[in-house]
Length: 574
Image 1 (cartoon, rainbow, N blue to C red):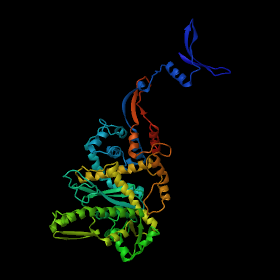
Image 2 (image 1 turned 180 degrees about the vertical axis):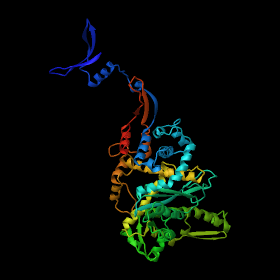
Image 3 (image 1 turned 135 degrees about the vertical axis):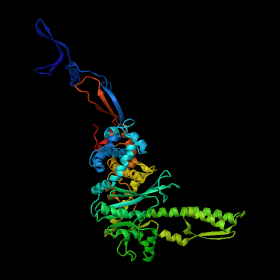
Image 4 (image 1 turned 90 degrees about the vertical axis):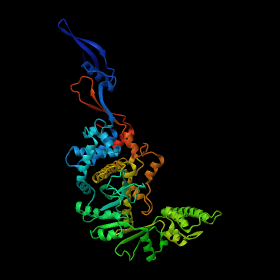
């Protein structure tokens, strides 16, 4: 049986299904069917059947499915990691160590969890997605991850040096800030009690300092004991910049709690680094009072450069944010009213009909508790005697505080324009975003359960590398997110560098309409990654007879928004 195409002079060829038989020593053709009117695709299927092929009703009948796992989110993360050269960043040569570290970084972005749970995600026997298959890890347990973390710490300096080579340059800018995270477990010797930014009373913590490039891409992280002051972490960063990264002339941008006068004088200036930092309120007040500055000038402008004998070789830029000033005024007034309500109760207990509070010492304890809670002691004057208590607002202190509402100041060794100094100092907000992402959003750096100092460092370093990947993921997926797509446009639309940053008009519209520019529903980063996990990869082997029996990957549930996300990331499923 065969297919024969018979040409016609003035019309389309006739396509017939024929069979040849020998009759009386001659070959005789028999026509079985005329398939001319059918499509070329259908005729091709008939041709395959005639040649001995097999017809199936569905793809599932044609293949034996050996695995079917979520893959889209894995492809997204690993695809961006490949674009960033993460493998070469970790180690120049392919090894099981390198693949394990890449797996832990990807797992931290996909589903942050303990190392035990992460080992289950990476183990071929319990893998819930295709991450194990993509990295070729096969069997993985938690001890494998701990061994890889120990080796990662040994290679940490090399990795940070490679990141610095990518994103820092001589004479450029580096941002530095400090945060902390609480730990679980009493046997963690490296942890200590300190200023707990997480608000976890009774919990020990560790302190870590993060260094980034001017755009907020992380370069390095160092971990310190939980009772280390922010200012005490600065020296190691200067040494790292100059000795490990080999960058002698840099601009160091640090928060006012880190780059204080002592550190500038004894550490930054001797190293020959330029710097930008903020001033504390008490320092601003001293400058304003000593130099008799007319803050009424802020009625016409919100930024002014001042010269002070207290800082003869520095640039000082005073700024006033009217929105923050109004907020500070409202907050202070609310707290004053609350304190007065509490103090009135004490007055009632002392002078009321019951007069149950008479002892001078007990009255003082009650008053002290109120001021300890609300931190408003300086705004009141009071008098306590045996069986007597009275108070009034300290009008002079309140007026003095109001003068500096919304006022902040920038100090620097640079000779740039005032607006540029303010803009560069505000770059520190990108480090705050990094901390927020690592701590309380998607990467979940806390709580820390490791006991050894090296493991704590490895855990935080892994979170930093995961943030490096997520930073680029968010930037690429911005058109689908409630995020700023074009930071340059946002900067161009900003009327004043002093006022709080506002979204661009395009982003404002996206947030208001809940739709992207091409009509898709805008969503969060987590929602996009969750939706990508719906793209599954089924691996099957053909049931039908073929020349060979290769494994075939079939991708299911590909929706328009999922394909849009993969296209934005530059990833093709194959």
